Length: 391
Ligand SMILES: Cc1cc2nc3c(=O)[nH]c(=O)nc-3n(C[C@H](O)[C@H](O)[C@H](O)COP(=O)(O)OP(=O)(O)OC[C@H]3O[C@@H](n4cnc5c(N)ncnc54)[C@H](O)[C@@H]3O)c2cc1C
Image (cartoon, rainbow, N blue to C red; front, side, top):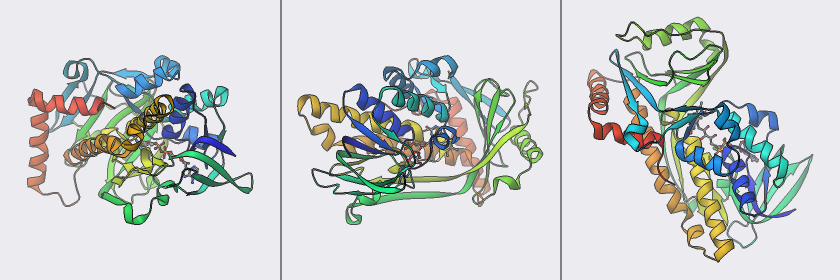
């Protein structure tokens, strides 16, 4: 089998890249290790930056998002029994974010790809990328019980944190940067209308809590728990009671809406960057190259930024013979990646309570929140970062 761009992974990065290349008239083949149902049902991100929304629309896959997604003009910061609304359009010259689940983004992209795009093979597990630094890189993969080879002009590793693509970069050229956090997120989905019409990021002495949503009828909520916690060790009643305690506020109109919990899972918190993001004709995109803790809602949006950068760079080469953007892919992406790493780290450490936190640490967090909610400059910085850095 042969193609121009071999894409490993059908998460948001791989699927959107295939669509952008298709729209630019460039051939690709997507290899996905898991089956379609798995990719379409894996609960993960839910907040799309303004730039991500714009790109999905331009790529022709925004119609259902525009019908069913929930545009949001702000978030609430809650701490010290106080509520503060951050007004995105007012602070950023009109930017919003969209609540639309990653599962739905993937469903829309898969439907478009299967309707008129290049091959998208499910249960096709990449085993290795070979010849990354030659003019003819190859992906060795297993599909329908036999090993096969996909010959490519370029390979893009969109295979997430546990993928194989980045192993093809020689160790002596790689530098990694990592931080793990001593806490995790216990996430739930519940069949109940959200308690508030915008997301609530809540700092309390008992730990962080996030109130979010998937639709007008489905609540998504998270609790900070110790790293290594088993989701099933928390009963439904314990989860609601803990959310209630952490979200306490001096506002008699606040009420936590409870309902049947339909799913529980635990997400570890990690910051990770792999440099470089390109080796020869192998390019890394999305979680394959970097991870952020989910507090800043940046992971999916960073993946989108990477694949836009690659698609534009390859289009410039195909149309004008200009290789500069391909050559500088890693540097271009990493600049934006490190801004998102910085923001995600800052949000995480401002809002979570470390197990060894002291009274001094608590006061510093409260002073940070006080600053963000009383200085227009500080609040604008948060709003700009949350709604998205330019690609
Ligand atoms: C609980 C949680 C909440 C989150 N919330 C947000 C949020 O609000 N906003 C946000 O922007 N981000 C959020 N994220 C992060 C976001 O989900 C990820 O950053 C995003 O999924 C990255 O997309 P990706 O395509 O790079 O990788 P992935 O989604 O991980 O996709 C990689 C794909 O590659 C496939 N694959 C792996 N290995 C192979 C192989 N060898 N061969 C073939 N296929 C392979 C995998 O099966 C997978 O389908 C959240 C993450 C979690 C866990």
